[in-house]
Structures are given as C-alpha cells and as structure tokens.
Image (cartoon, rainbow, N blue to C red; front, side, top):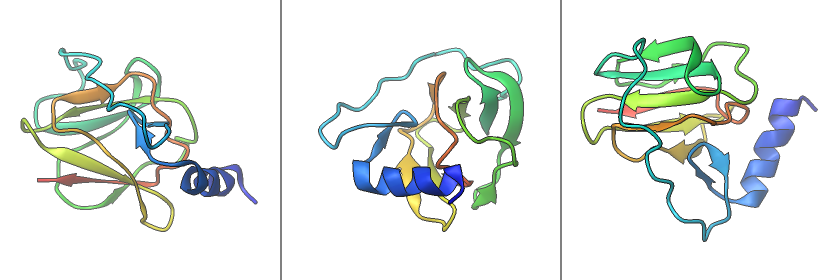
Length: 124
C-alpha cells in the first residue's frame, strides 16, 4: 500500500487534524502562527508550500472550487490562507473525503503536513 494511502487510513483511525497536523479529538484549536503573509501569497489566495516556513511555493489558488494540489507534496510543507477575511479552506484526501478545515482567513501553518491532502477547496 502506498505511503499516502496508509497515512490516510491512519488519519481516519486517529482523529481530526489541527493546523494540518494530526491531533486528538480533545486538542485545542491552533491559533494563527503569523500575521504577515509571505510575499508570494497575495491577498485573495490560498498558498501551499513544499517546505516548512513558506519556502518553495507549490501552488496558489484563488478560485472557489475543489482543486487538485500538485504532485510531489507528500509530507511536510506549510500553507497560508490569505483569502478574504473569514474565508475557510477545506483540505480533502484521495477520495475527496474532508481531512481538515482551516479557521477563517488570515490563517496559516508554518509546519503542516501535505501527506493526507490531495485537494483543497476554498469556501468563498
């Protein structure tokens, strides 16, 4: 079984994700890590990075529909939701099952985990 598939199965058995990381159901909601968006993530976009701390931009989505993230984002990474204030973004697995929903923008995770994520959908 591919690593990504086995991680999705682990995720389903473990509980919800908080800040892009697996957490127990009783875990507190993570607080925003940053108030300044990266320079390559303009207002109105959800930006995904291959590496932690917003390094190596992998995608920048603005549209409000489910979009597949690029190949090669198999673990680690980071993201910044710099969309309209309050806009949430859902992260979905291989079979389009919801893995995590971000708090409203602006919100970010400098140390996320792309392994269980195959799609993102901003709820505009």
